Image (cartoon, helix red, strand yellow):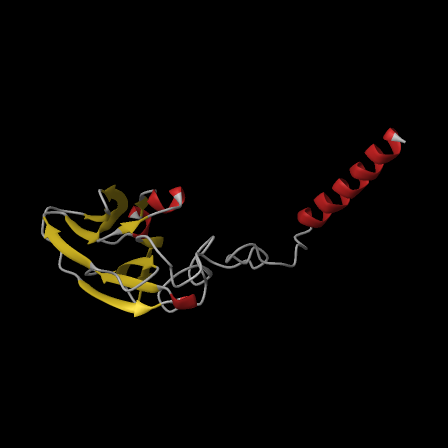
Length: 177
């Protein structure tokens, strides 16, 4: 009986492996379509300004208690404009400071519950003035630092917009050069 179960599991595993090898998974995993092959431009289907994707493990909105949550930080270049976007669970209370070589965004009374959303984004490969976007807890606040090339104080434009699922998004656009 034990050998029969082992053989059955082996056959099922081999069939699943063969299906994955043939690329016939036919479904989406999370917000990324893993069956679609395309070039680097235009294939991202995750959280972004104007997109309808939800972040991983989204909380039910509105939050009943506690601080707001930053559920996603991201970077994109759209129409040549380097853009940092921060998705939060409600209209953000924030302030922005320009410093030499960086823009610092402080989100008041905010936490970042998923460790992956606290990782720095190395965006040098986009070949824009932006080098890195890092996130750090500072007491009851979250500090997002956008590091740029050179020592100048970078100019920026910011706005808050609606995001999918009732979330809000703080969008920071920096100059292309």
